[in-house]
Length: 124
Image (cartoon, rainbow, N blue to C red; front, side, top):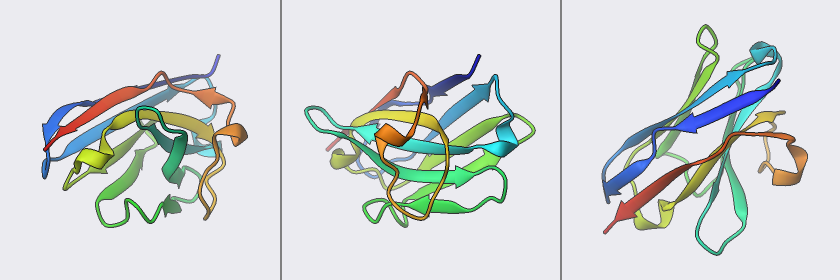
């Protein structure tokens, strides 16, 4: 059974940092990419970053470039999303999903396997 668990969210002041984790199990980790989405209150779910566990290639949405860094520890079947210089507009529930990582914005309908989400709240 494919399982993804996202954790690491919390309440942070603007300018702070967080590291989110996505722990995966139930599939061959190296064969998949892990994608990070976020969904702000009242808004659609948006793909912000992904990493291919087969070749290490990454993607970042323009809105997060320079502040978000995605990395993978294949030995631990875990992907991390380091978020620096947090802004109030980063407030959202962050989800990880398993599937392809392409050099274009990931779309939610392309992914079948999802974690439960972890909430990030940034205070101004």
